[in-house]
Image (cartoon, rainbow, N blue to C red; front, top):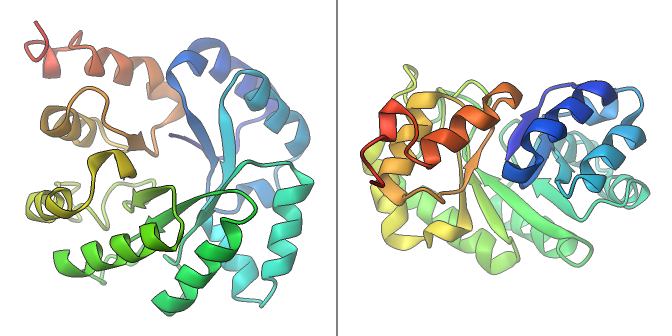
Length: 230
C-alpha cells in the first residue's frame, strides 16, 4: 500500500507507469482527497492501472466527529470506491462504536480498519492490540492496518523508528499474518518485516519513490536481503 500525500494527476500517471505491477493499493493520505484538485481524474488513473485507491481513515474520522457518517457514505459512493478505511487515531471513539461503523460500512464496501493511535504518548499493551484486532475482524474488517503514521515513529515503533519487536511477535501469535498490513515507511522497517515474515509480507505507507527499491528488497536483490533467497 502506497501513500499518496497529494500527487497531481500527472504524478499519479508517472507512479503507475513505473510501479503499477508492484502496487496493490494507493491510500490518499489522511484527508488530502478532500481538497486535491482533479480527484476524479486521479482516481481514474489508478483504476485504469489496476491499482485500488482509497481515502485515508482520518477523512472517516472527520465526518464521524461531526456526526456525518451518512455523508461519508455518499462520498464513497460518489467516487465509486471499492475499499474504505476506518480508523480512530485522531479522535476518541469507543471501540464498540468503531466496530458498529465497520459492520455498517462493510455492507457497502470492503473495509480496511486501522489499529493504533497517532499520539506517541498513548502506548497500548500487546494484549490490547490483539483484542482490538480480533474484534475488528469479527465486525467485518477485511484487513487490519497496524498504525505507524507516515513518519514511522508511533504505534508499532518507538520514537526512534525502532520496531517494538515484542509487540509484533505477540500480534503474530494471535492474528493471521495475511490479515495485517504493517505500516513501514522506513527502509529498516521494511527489511525487518521481510526478514521476519517473508518476501510477500503486506507493507503499507510506502513512499511513492520507494516502489522499485522495495521490490528489489523483497526479491533479495539488495544488500539488506541479498542472502535471503539464494
